[in-house]
Length: 263
Image (cartoon, rainbow, N blue to C red; front, top):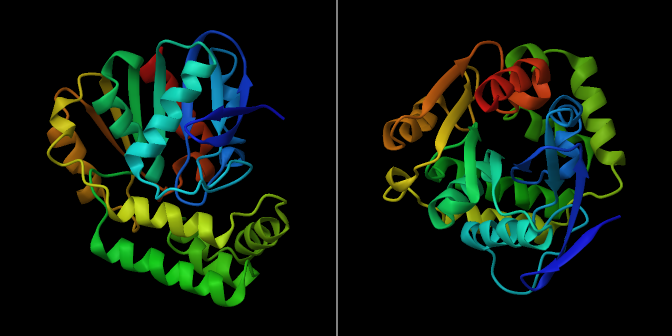
């Protein structure tokens, strides 16, 4: 199980395939396992790197206060440890916040940038929602009910009404051996609440693809479109039949869009 000692923490990662490096950065509460459905499509063409952000999975939370900028530092130091000078950077949701900071602060380390279901700032509504979710986790732990309430914000209506999908999602999540601890979730929520890149995204020079689901109610299409307005020359794709977790709901649609952009 490879781990890199960097930035004051131990960071878990996995590498698949060969070719140009492609770094995948997960969202709030998500670790490297969230990319399991798409790695097989990327790895024939790219050296695909997945990892657990600080505060989740098999990575440390760390003792200092976390921030999106700090997590972007983690990502670049991971590439340093792997002796990778430049990579394509793909971030989902909070991972999209991290990817933005990466592209802003380390422009020479980015080939192309893909931002999935993300925005240049987290809304107050979402910050309050995440605090509620954290409070529920503290009270009841990782129950199936907790995951089902969280799922409403992640998936499109056709998945939410499918009781077999939701039951399988909740049961599988509860049984996952590397569940995020409450303090890790709290640290990521605090990092999200302090993130605001609205005045900086215009400095991003990397060729950028922005993917957003029409049914996303967590980070809405209107919020995601702010990125397209701010990042000159970016490509914005609004996708039918998917919500916040495009790469999980429809991995073929997701990987098709990304591969066309990268290749």
